[in-house]
Amino acid sequence: MFDLNEAEALYLDETDPVASNRSKFLIPPAPSGDGEAAYLAGNSLGLQPRRTRIDLEAELDDWATYGVGGHTKPRKPWVSYHEGLRDPAARLVGALPAETVVMNTLTVNLHLMMVSFYKPTAERYRILIEDGTFPSDSYAVRSQAEFHGYDPDDAVLRVKPREGEAVVRTEDVLDLIEREGDSIALIMLGAVNYYTGELMDIPTITAAGRAAGIVVGWDLAHAVGNVELRMHDWNVDWAAWCSYKYLNSGPGAVAGAFVHQRHLADASLVKFSGWWSTNAATRFEMKPELDPVHTADAWQLSNPPIMAMAPVETSLKIFDEVGMPALRQRSLRLTGYLEKALGVALADVPARVITPQDAERRGAQLSVQIIGADAEHVSTRMRDEYGVFTDARQPDVIRFAPAPLYCTFHDCWRAARALHEVLNSAG
Image (cartoon, rainbow, N blue to C red; front, side, top):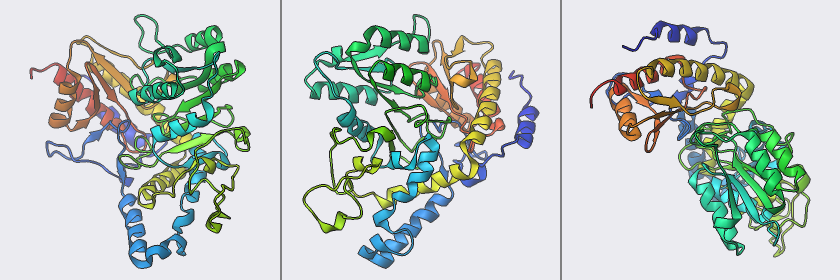
């Protein structure tokens, strides 16, 4: 029997100092037909805000009304639309507005950043990543190494957890930087690991890398909208992120990038250029040569996709309304309660939570490794029979993400109970 009092979860929902914003989102129905789902898969794809359809239809209406005149229409002219996303995006990543741009998708932005910041030499050519990085990041850095004429098996340096451990220790990253720093041109780590949910020590690793003469960039895909970030103050060289996970902007949503202020006027940085890279004030003079700007806009290429940017703007407004400090505190309480509930659920099965126990070393995610289980089968049963959405990573890990904007303590209770029931029943 799942021995955890449901009333406690309901009481915590009633008394939490940061109210749930669940009513602002469209919650999928439980496949069983029994009310709303408990959606703990926002680290894979966030839920749709209710205002998204309204805001997107407003842009469609403007297209119908103005045609090409929509570029200069009175309400949110398309020609400058992306500028309205700059300030709220900067607040989320702890940056200056000039350091921030919303554009493209994540891996495209990673490549654009590496065009400028991966400058290998015969002596210093390696790229440091975590061994358990998301595969697309691994593909990206390996392809960059190949593009520059290096063997990726040599040029890509992977820092691994210690034997028998699931997460990378900060001291092991620092030790690798000290030992191999003279050969490393770029550090590109995931701020929050997609698999384990580990929050890396961004300021410490960044400081060590830069002290060793290494450019330091961060993939914020699982960090933005999840944990508090201070990209400018931490002196990070550059970063990139996506918007479809914790930022709830829709599948394949427009992403973002950060470039530290100290690099913005550096004429020696190579960049690919396009229509939106040039100075907006002189863009329509149609000159053949670029008129450079000293902001992160310089890394843009094409004019922004308005219908794809509208959902990003909708989401960023919600984060501005609630604020990351309040969301982070709610997240710590939700994830702490889920950890307690999973402890009850897993009491009689061979399993372990591979996410760090230290709350300051994780975001809104707990990854459970169930020895001998088929993670996809377990996750599917939890969804179909109990209305609990999670994310399975084969062979045996299930990721639970209690996103603080719309998840509740009762969602966490439901998730733990569903896991317990599935693991302790036949099928």
